[in-house]
Image 1 (cartoon, helix red, strand yellow):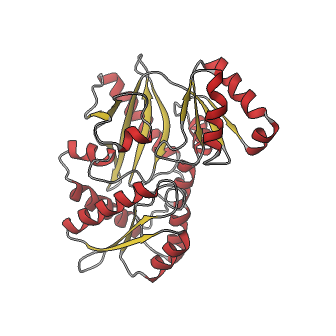
Image 2 (cartoon, rainbow, N blue to C red):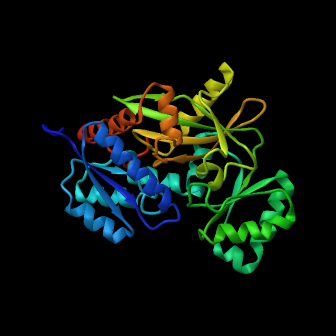
Image 3 (cartoon, one colour):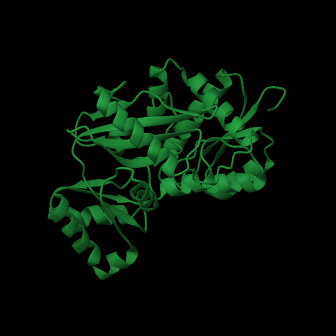
Length: 328
């Protein structure tokens, strides 16, 4: 640990479809980290090359990753920082890559017994041959409703809930416009919840669960980032048995991918009280009103305190020599 004030470089911006979300996270974090007593160096760039150049020149003690989408959550910036010998926040490169690729994470969840909706993956060859529409239509017949989404995007970018055959073609076109791999997933009726898994001093715990209630439609990009479009219940009204199941699924998903320090696990909870993991976010949104800070606030942690804990836990993890590249 540094003897003087800790110097924190905040990486944000990028060139992914989630750039605007990253800019909001980065600016909010810079303010929060300054409030927590750190010396802050904002590193905002609009391309991976520029970000790597700025990172290489920086002598910060730790790099706080607030990049969303590609080159933020997909493990590449984490791998680059490791090659440079830099300390950074959150999960390692492998965990981030696995979490960002919904196809890969779903395969691991299934292998590790983590409850997750059934799904199939479509590729460019399926699109060119015309097989994509047929496969999605068959999935719709089997599962009544399906979710079509890019395999490697966050913030609900390119996601459509499909209830009829007439919606399949447009949903596939949208998803393929964002990624070359598209997931067709069984839609799970029920409540939408999100859980922050927290690691500190080798102890794993959960922050209060949030139940998400969009005022109309589903929890898409607009509902997430438009004020007043969604109601958040924190802590979520869960029965004791539901709380136990949710906790077990969240920690299992976090460990299945090898996540460290913290992650946000998104789920559906059926009427019968059974959770299904949709995805794990290794670099979740970090504005004062984002989901992880909301959950931390219910614990009594201000945004400054949350940012401080992430930095300290990340530095302790790396200084202890714990390998971030392996699944546990």
